[in-house]
Image (cartoon, rainbow, N blue to C red):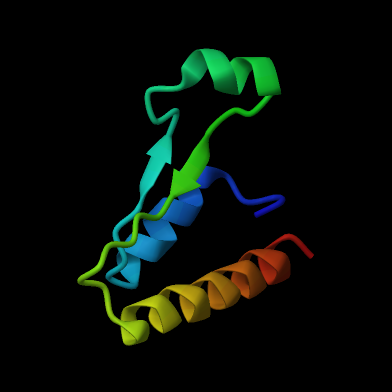
Length: 72
């Protein structure tokens, strides 16, 4: 998400009970080549439910709105 540091996004998602990883993900040389400081990775598996996916997407929308309001 543009304008939100990946570690801030990961922390905000964690506060919503959503676990993600933020950082280089063992791909620092590639990220340096692409000019990317760090990323957030969400991993879904066969056992995740539709409700969990919906919660993740809703949280992303809320977090984006929060940070947009904070930056104004």
